Length: 357
Image (tube, rainbow, N blue to C red):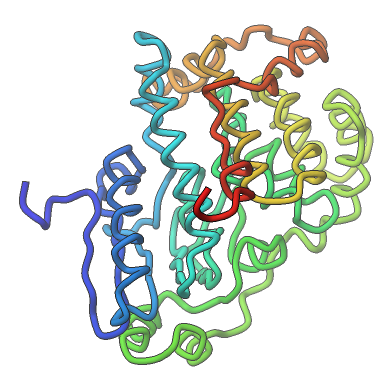
């Protein structure tokens, strides 16, 4: 494999070090090799005085990253014991935490499709750029999974119940709505991105971005806050669906119908995860919680079935088990949050331990 064929391209131009996700045929979906390569690069650049900024982009012109390599997760959950998937998530979530604490400006260019794991390598950065082409989503409930990579924390911090709406439906949002929800910081037209990248080689990150940042085109979510906040404030998914159906706004009805196509188990666990994330004090604590939840999904039928229906066979007709919201009990949900003992991710514990111990 030549350098040009590597799934992650690394280069330093001027004061900027570049990470280019380079699997365009897979919409730059993250695999374990890519996670390790990015982590190693951040380690090297953190201690390189010549590097002032890290810039993350995606190859192929369609998006930054469409998520994690869920085909590999599917195969491991179906045919293996889940060990490979757990190892991938362990390193991926460590990388997410590393990005959030990186001591140098980390500029994520969230152009085009940014979903799932793509959010994890971008939205935890401290300089996050969206364009008119950005489509950002955490669509996990549609594959029988739960938002991860710190996504439950990001969505829990969104205004009102916007994050609950996005977490449960998996709806994609554009630039203005990403700014509103706290998933991005600046809007830069896609045509200006080459000039922005050139300026990052010479200027401090925030100064370079400020040269090109503009007000975004209007979004949609601000005008929908009324019914979103009212309906998603409910304590259960069943009550959320009831309120959405009763509200009368066409978009509320559409959201209800969307929810009824999602995995009932994933919906209930996602609601619990987002609500719990609001009470946790750090990203590390949330990632520890998400690791428990993610590992628990490997023992469910819905993860394999959801990926099969959406990604493998593409029949878009998953057979969820259990099939109805009412069949998923509080005890069923609680199992996803059970501590893992020696298999815990332990990011919060590690961060709270003084150096040298």
